[in-house]
Length: 322
Image (cartoon, rainbow, N blue to C red; front, side):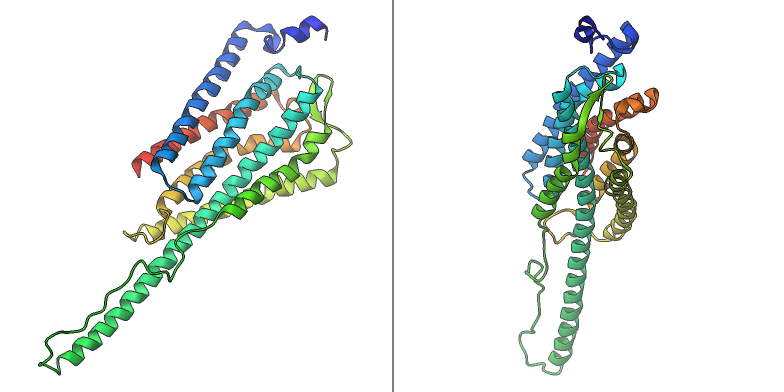
């Protein structure tokens, strides 16, 4: 590649096809502009609601991660569509490291969001059980008082018992500080090798072959693919069951709305699994994005960044309906 070719890239993607270039830059412009506007709207919605709970904390962190994704979108799509890396080795280190880091953060945030939703649902169900137990005990005592009072017609006033629903006998919120800190620390830890071992070879930004061995691949498959996928599937079924149970109750005795949390978590998690997780899987198993099938890479790339926009729209719609 001579100097003139380097200068024209990435403005000459896909064999200098004019319409392909227009399509690519249109996608980049729409994705970044619309995505940023929607992220700001989601942020405004969260601030306007003035709620401080676990779900809001997770959503704010997703906004941070998605903002970094919009920065990476230009380099990622340019690299995949042109099948060449033209941004230098230092940028290769930053790009590959940040891509690995943000994908890990997003994955682990959704995992902790699912676990938080399950814990919140359990908290709400426990509160209902506590209230029901109090009601049964008070009803029993009131019945006893009523039966005793009938034997004393001279009593002018009967004793009654009231239930204190705001008592401190149960937890009303869940602290998410430690899980959130753990997500970022763990994500950075698993991404350190990609910052160090990414290299530019044959116009491709990829992981150094010295780092690419069976032991590392097994660890990547285990911690970035297998374990998260298993936890996702199990948690989705658990959340569906919890949602069915919570719909039987009309009152909520904890700080967060468990039904709203479960609905938002389920929809956003399913979107992530179907439209973003496949790209993370392919990227984790390959030394370079251009080692994959060209059309598969392009489709996964488009779906990955389009889902960020869709995620914001879904949250806004669910928030307005609740």
